[in-house]
Length: 294
Image 1 (cartoon, one colour):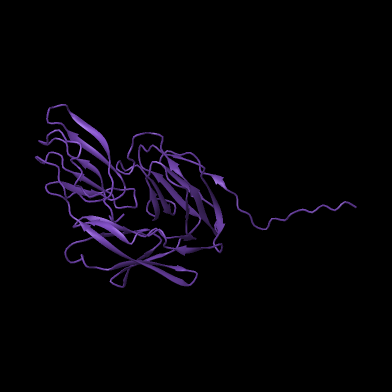
Image 2 (cartoon, helix red, strand yellow; image 1 turned 90 degrees about the vertical axis):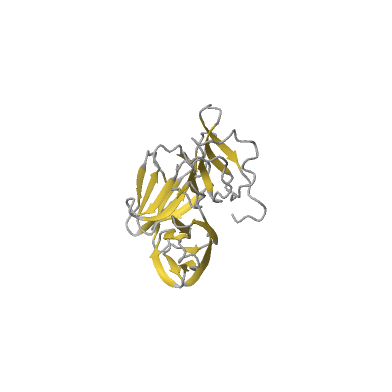
């Protein structure tokens, strides 16, 4: 008698490719599971500054844009990331007119009780915020299902959700406030205290936080402000600087040598030559000073 062994699959997970989409895509798995996505995105356009141009991928924990934020990604080429939802829905959104493609990317459903310990290893403990402007602190907690992140302000709970960002506005009263984020990792509390460096906006320019990144990148708009020289107190996380329509002379090669920058390394610049040659857009490669906070 011929005996044939037949494997019995009691529970299985099947990787699915992320479908091509233009702007938004809802990923769903069976109820009782959570979504695990592994992905990389890239753009073939060069040169380009996706973070400065607010070109990004946004991932949320639910079925639409109102759900909590799991992460945003905006590099030219990202490493492979893994993100997990708290339930059976995960919502992806590209910014409009994005230049990205997925590379070697897939998702699958994981049982809710199939956990990955939560950790805070990717949290930057010194972050930059703009004085008297809307800013955010970032706590990219990892784990599966998506861990709840408890944000504390001077020890009191200020937010409790899976969102990796905490919105705030630092003024004179808030400048000495202590913030932290914490997660429960299989019964073990893990916490990171987050300090911040407060940056001011150079007068008479306007500053705003750019969407779609996890580094607090800034736009500085000095258009039509009658500048006669380049401001030297530009925030360190500036990646977009508009100096157009001013009375600036032709910019010498080392005009930005005194500007402090973080190690993001690329500044997108608008300028207008005084000789009437028109407006020009350029990319400057910048290096951080030794010991500069990342």
